[in-house]
Amino acid sequence: MARAKPLPDIGAAVVGTGFIGVVHVEALRRLGVEVHGVVGSSRERAEARAHEAGLPPAYESFRAMLDDPRVDVVHIASPNHLHHEEAKAALEAGKHVVCEKPLAMSSRQSADLVRAADASGLVNAVNFNLRFYPVLQHLRGVIESNGLGAIRLLSGYYLQDWLLLDTDWNWRLEHDQGGELRAVADIGSHWMDLTSFLAGTRITSVMADLATFIKTRRRPTGPLATFASDSAAETEARDIRTEDAANILLHYEGGMAGALTVSQVSPGRKNSLVFEIDGAESGAGWNSERPDELWIGHRGRPNEVLLRDPAIMNPQGRKATYLPGGHAEGYAETFKALYAAVYDVVAEGKPGDGYPTFADGHDSMLVLEAVARSAREGRWVEVDR
Image 1 (cartoon, one colour):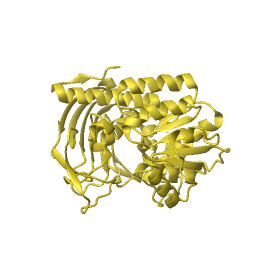
Image 2 (cartoon, one colour):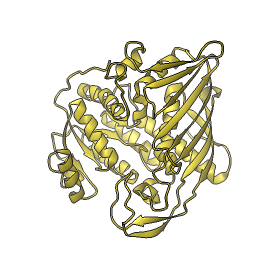
Image 3 (cartoon, one colour):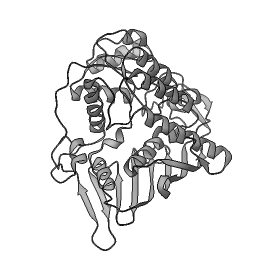
């Protein structure tokens, strides 16, 4: 099982006080990392969130946080358009960085962050936390040892319903804050990174069809948190330029084929990531809403369902799990397992392996740009590496 290894005196700060920023704070606390404060979109909002979480008073500014010598690691969970500027400033201030995905607004920006991170010698990570479900770490080990045979097909979807109504609103809908892609960048990027990680290979080309079903939305004139709604809020009409849903065909290195459906307007689907990986000998399937179960399919013998249990999982799976079998682990634990890997190398003072880096975030940006270009031009597009 995952180590309860004590960490040295490493301090952190979190930039962003929305839903995901709070998840970062809670995971760090459970890992035993002291969070010295948060930075928000406004001092008032940050102060309120800090008070709710029992944290020290919020920093007056992003610069004040960078100037705090107690902060060794900066976690960036702000809107996408701020990632490049904030991550680069943190590196230049001598801080290790964990950044939410997408890493930046363009591959030009993400490449700049890779160069800056390499030059700094500091630990850099992208928050592709879904890799760290224990049964998925186990599956990675199975595939590495050729347990499914040669991989042929990867298929599945990532469906949510939190933007189903025209009155649903979030900053991700703003083209200048979220970027050219929305549903694909926000959740499709997780599916594509995860399947690439599991198969041990990269996406090489894409054919994408994007759909915007709600072309005009009602934007609240006041602030609104992710996944929150307020039907009584005063609103204004805003035109929408980003996609509600997408269907994407994928080619991976080694001749593997893939198919992905992404949606943020699927009624009843709260956070349903599903994939199936078909090999020449066996298959494997998983649903994020049943995270402790890994389905394994066979041709000539009964199929299996592996329930997460460190007693029967391989070393990769055991390392990512914290509880005995039968004690459910879920979304929050993936952050803790990712940060455990990151903070182990922070304690050593230099980058290591076993976690997604800025290089992974840059590769994801290249895939996203290929998706956007494919949708614009209506054809297969190679990922430009």
